[in-house]
Length: 473
Ligand code: GLU
Image 1 (cartoon, rainbow, N blue to C red):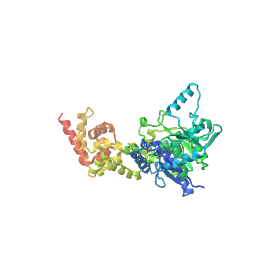
Image 2: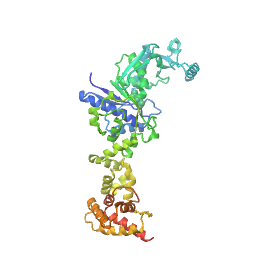
Image 3: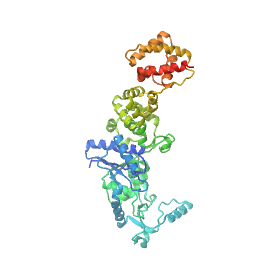
Image 4: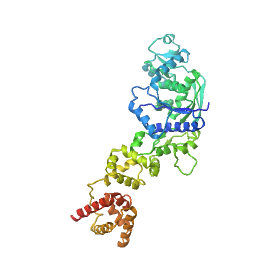
């Protein structure tokens, strides 16, 4: 058997997190590599919605939309875990029947008392339910019990994880966890194994927060004599303070990244370099090349820091690419502020983007910039950098500008340079106040770019308004 079946199994209990995208991405890369050898390989998507109280449709939608936007395609239609609950129950009873599980009637309070007693005696005993297994009355009950796994006390279990290497755990370290709750609902530990088996999953790639679950889950596989999957637990991503990446650090939901104006290419590039290195000098790498060179077994075991500056660096690189201009227009269509401006003047928006793309990290930074250029009521805020000397020079400059026949960047640049030469003025002395007059900003692109974006009519309108207001003083 060469075909690889992997899965991404998010719980719809929150919006799709960037860490989830990373897991999905690694699964996607591995399956794309495998498809080259065996086209039957597949990446399945399973929505793990068995936690009814916390699962929400809006989260499920965020998962599907987020994956689609990232270009992470899965095979078949999504599997919905709650649709297989009867099958999970059937397996719980099968394990019970074969003696690999037992009925338990311990209450939460009883278990807590035992835990505290053990704590006092400084005993770290994982199995808190000790009496039910050998109590024949409990084992004959027809209702009001939960089903727990029955794991022998002796022996150990080992796994060769593709990323973590060899991991060994003594059986006595594993708790007798619940398979089926008293209310008849299956637990994550049971459902995940039954579904992975039934869906034919043979490589399980997920975050290393699930590493401890391997041993519990392997006991279920072994008890049922099912083929064991291969595991690869990748390290999680952390914020720059070493803690698990969360809202505190910045955007974490994939939708937030989309709304801010990040490109999937930049996110992929940033995520894949977190614990794997393509052996090449430059760090820019796109999905095709990643698929050709990625090696799951070469992923680092240690957690990595998600660096927003690095992401900005990649995003700035990708958004400048000529062939990616279409993504800017897609973004504008979904961003109400930019869309409004775009509908007023498409050419202006294009000019703005082409000038500012070198300086922005993500598209939504253009919201504030656009407000300046589209402002028909624009007024220069007078300040002491705009003095009488400057006003005299500006009047002169406007006469030169008036001679320009074609309002192009080059003609504007030539006009400015000739003017400065003629007046023997250094560029910053003149450029900065002109920028302020036209945009109320001290920093920004070169003056000829600003003049070009505004166009002849608006440039003169703003300059004349300024001169008039300055004269009134
Ligand atoms: N549903 C689990 C989660 O969202 C993942 C389960 C698994 O990959 O085994 O964390």
